[in-house]
Image (cartoon, rainbow, N blue to C red; front, side):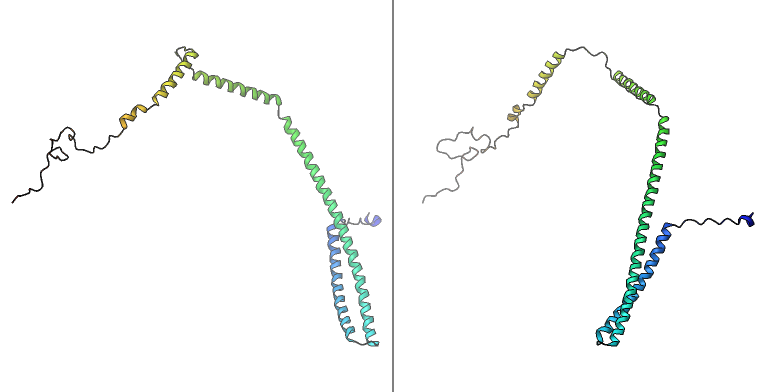
Length: 226
């Protein structure tokens, strides 16, 4: 069969756009190196021409410089063309990658929605409402238990008006208790005496000087008469 129809050619994988971009950039870089060499050669020709007089020798150098300049211009056009190709392929690659990312995002979102729907099927709204009702009933029962535990027994029945009157009277008593003016006389400090005790009770005899104790003063000296 292979002799009649021949062997099937192996399928060649399609070119990868990233490889194409890399190949074009490599070519452009190689041509740029050639342009730089031509630019160096042109500078040498210009220096020679600036030092030469008009004549056949200068014209020969000028012709060489013109030839190098033409080559440089041709290479520059090739570089521009290659850079444009690389840019266009990069834009196409970017657009393709963006579409892939968008497609992956859409697929992920669809899968997420499916998972949500699946989980929602396992949730019963009525059961949630029943749970809330049960919790409310339990809290109400717990409140009733607390009220029952805090209940008081054998408390006398007292009229609210009587309690209010007693409370007002209690307030007046507290106000009276706060009045401490009656303690002023008790805590008052007695004055310091300026005389010896009993000095006022002793009456000095007429014509006789007495001391601070009410006793007659002793004369300090006696006059002698000659």
